[in-house]
Length: 178
Image 1: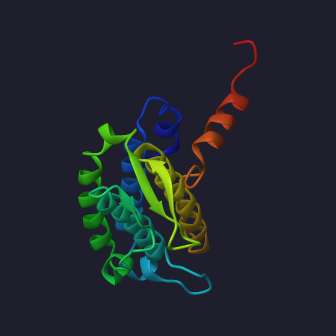
Image 2: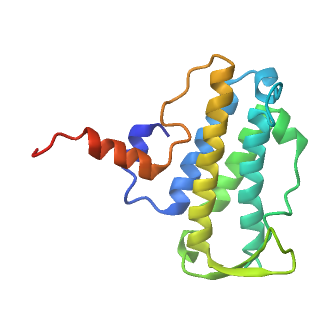
């Protein structure tokens, strides 16, 4: 999804927004050669590690829906997804398909394991967690954008930019008094 599509997303559900952002990550992965995808030199993470992280957060969310208890710390840290763009794209397709089944659960209560106190759980909703995952994925796409720049690869200028910032920029650019 490029920036122009995100500008018109005011009616999209959080699940649809997340699916589109995950697909955007898969498209980036498939556009790279495997060496670039997994190269972490000079940075704390490779493009592949960021994509793997995003996908595993979504996987934890989806797996947790069975009992309405989500544990984002239970990520598998799958080396294949982190090192192979095709494996990342396949994982993306699988998760996007599963996300298609959760939109109607938006107001359902879930309990999310605390990351600072693993014995504590916080009350949330499916819809709020979808928004969190969308925002989290966009944030990691900002980090991916920086890695792409470091490799001399052009990226969409809206890659990794929050939807609220895109909307703000659009309002500022609109002619006054229309």
